[in-house]
Length: 563
Image (cartoon, rainbow, N blue to C red; front, side, top):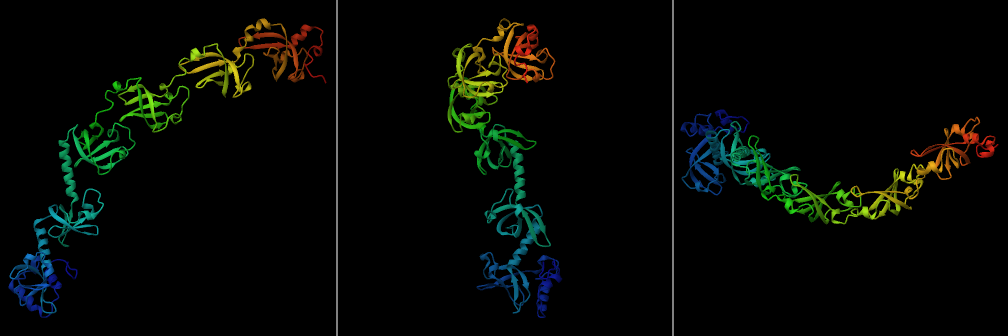
């Protein structure tokens, strides 16, 4: 672009760029007539001149271009000092036909730039490959010397993330010309496009060359939760976390870091999708090979607790080999629900191998098996029928748990508390901490269950009820409960019986409370026995009828309250 903002290389534009005065006309006309300044004013070389060095000063080179006066060129514009000698022919650019002192002003630097631009125009086109040196930083990118200065945008410098532009300064690379703007005389280049093309070419070649089972080097370029991506000199490969080590790790970053070079094995290749699966642990022997021979069931092993989970603890018995101690295998006597109740992470322990599932990579271990099993001879120590004194440890809706010895508990079911009482909750007859006598009813070593009974210490009155209290016999008792349908009576032998509302009196009455109340003593006749369901029916009415003329109030003094 000219100084006045006009574009192109026409004569008018050139004249606009040169500040002619009246005395300049003769000089310019001489240039045209001599042929030094070409008449083809549309050519970019219209202001290019050739001359010889006539004189050298401290700051200037005096050049004779065959005009009425010699021209001056700043000595700093000569990049090659070997050119500076008298008589040497040099090419210069006519900057001014005549300055205020009447001196022709020439430029060696502009001449060189002009020739460089012409060289680019003649020998290069968009898409051409050129070699250049990065010379400085500018806003938005770098400037590259390719024979002239070209702009390298920041996005086109490399195909990887750039941390510092300074690392590229002074380095020489190949570049691809992206854009040539003739009007503005500028060139835009790219290094990234060449790198991408090279990467794609390498990737294609590498996909053809690599084979499964090979070992290759790669650079860690990305780390994720599920694995690591490596650059295999032009192709990306995935090293999954499960293929990094035979040991258990939580995250790939435990083993590798960004930029690290590692050797990996090629596991599989998908040439259509350009994907490669890699393995690191496959370079080593599989510690699970012949695992059954090294650790047959029953083997005592030692190791360190490496992880606790809700269902158990993992112990490392050798690098890459871990076994699980399930909570159910931690104690003979405790019902373990949390492994931290028994073991802690980092603890060294011993365990017994229970089972091996090689294909699934699992070893089942037992901790309790390293100790004596108190349930082993429990049936001999506590045979059925044995009478023991035990302490009540806990009460539940269905019974009472007792401790026979540390680690050995038993249950007294609610139905085994009494022959004759209807117990709705154990707390009615027992409390925590009580010591009671009981009889061993059953022992199940496999299920670790022992049942006991309290009522079994005394004879079952229901077995002989028909002999001791036959139908028709007269009994005595105390009213314990009043209901709309009758009254419950506790007999002298402790058995509970029912007097139905229809059997309370031989006289008419309104409510049950009109003829009988709680806690009074009564005499009645047994009218029905049901030993199987433990039921006895009594009758005051029949008893009165049997007595004939005996007054009810005289015989059953508690039949009703006298007013």
